[in-house]
Amino acid sequence: MATGYIRNNGADLDPKEVAGLLSAWKQARLNRSTAYLTSTLEYNPVSFSPKEMLYNEAKQNLSLEIARAAGVPPYYLSADQNTSMTYANVQDERRQFIWMIQPYIKAIEARLSMDDISTVGHYVKFAVDDTFLRVDPMERLLVIEKMLSLGLITTEQAMEMEDLSPNGNEMSN
Image 1 (spheres, one colour):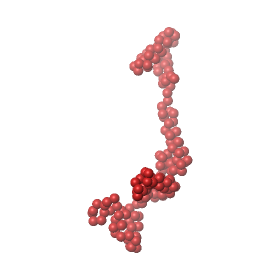
Image 2 (cartoon, rainbow, N blue to C red; image 1 turned 90 degrees about the vertical axis):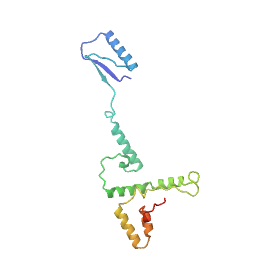
Image 3 (cartoon, rainbow, N blue to C red; image 1 turned 120 degrees about the horizontal axis):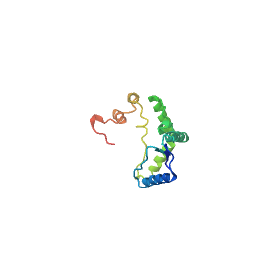
Image 4 (spheres, rainbow, N blue to C red; image 1 turned 90 degrees about the horizontal axis):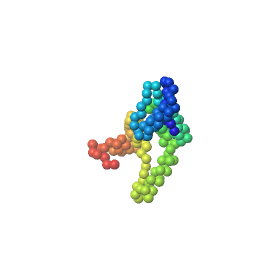
């Protein structure tokens, strides 16, 4: 398939000259060398750039359709660039997303915890609460303070909840 064409902007050429020119051009392409054209001849490529072929738009549309089919918020797949999420909205969306995929998470955890994959007595658990769903520090501290005042947890347990080691000692995980 041709990747372009040569256009003559000057006087018409003799058919033998055209055949010779095309032969020289073809030979130069086969040898991966530089081909030469006179000022009256112009090479016009026929190929299209990714921008002209709308590759980015097609990729964006495909990501959006995958997000819709899977029930995943589009911004998780970078399919929606027009999000104006606040911190509270992001936290709510994350909770809803985790709730939606919880059956899959449980199935994967159960399979990875089986004795043929993990060692006997060990289990696999995703830590989505610690990182993905972690609320802001002030809210966490208010909850811990309330639990301490009600006597539901000890100071050491509160420090462990915040990944703090008592008395500056290293915690063992």
